[in-house]
Image 1 (cartoon, rainbow, N blue to C red):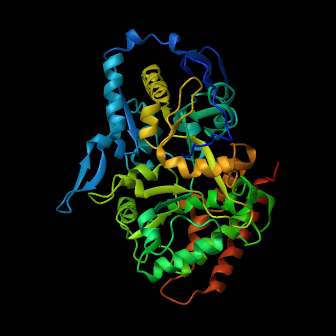
Image 2 (tube, helix red, strand yellow):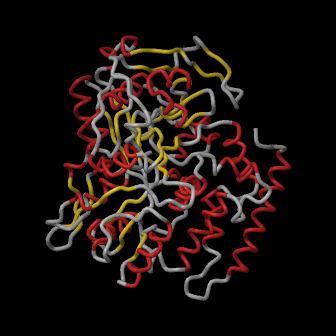
Image 3 (tube, rainbow, N blue to C red):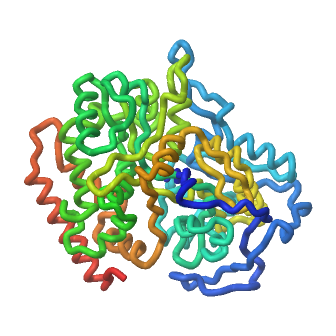
Length: 480
């Protein structure tokens, strides 16, 4: 999971007034063959004027989201240490109430913890689910479960180059992402860094690692990951781009017979993370869930997280009573040898389920989200739709300033194309994609309770290189 803005210098936003955009099912008109599937989908382009909003009054649509904090409110601690939900942070709930007041359409918000919670509903095209936000599907699953929202070309009219970073198969966008954000960088507690003599995140790898060593010596977890699950390791995909200075480290695995070796961007980055693990830079005790991991940065038990801007407002809502939330900041990753970079992409995706009986009402709500710059800013994103004046959250200031000064360069998230899809298929064929095993198997080959066994690590590297190339050759894919 989005989170990325700030490209004042990198991307100009058109302020021309626009109407809502959408494209969708029209009962059989305008159908064309969907790329990668034998099904046909409607791609008729619509505007807000094409939706009869009066006929939708009284309807109820259901939205399933993994962003429970925007429905229930942020978790906080009272003076007695008890956890409670601060509903002032329930931004999606408040937006849905405002939407109902304007259009007479009720939005039933449901929180799902994982994709597995809603997978059965999507597989059977259950009409009880209209919109969902689950972030971790493969392209094939998006094609299977989501109604094409519009074509990539149509999305470009309103979102420019960011349209290519939305979930798409090269032809259709399956998850409309109305905001932009910076991807994974360094989310940190400023007061914790100051406690060991640093005012900010160092700009070089050597200095960064020196700071992590000082934090560990001080009894602070330098980096909170929440390693009880594998998905946090997916941040390596972006950090591999920072290591290489290019945006194609993940799909670029196709270029090599040894993608997991440290001579290649992905392999080099995985080894760097694993070396950090061996040095004690990650949590000394596994955090039981991601909320606890975020708490650790908020209360200073840990100094940092290597995640996107979406984490910042959540951690800011978890700082101790009386602490200024602005101590939680967001900065570029260090220069790993090829310059200092930050990934930028579309953010905050919403998809219309294929089984929805109320696709027009669902589409109207998604477009309503895209027009509300304050809601998107409160959620940690920047409104990106043509004609919408963006509100830039303070959390982006450090990165904005670095981009404007030219000390940090922007890389766009790699657009979905045949290379990225083929790489995903190869990792799946090699039994390495599910649960991010292509990273997890290597990261876990080092046991921090013992002296690092790098022979075991290299043996796993060879095993994965062999599995990858065997699967690639079997599928007949090569870099295009």
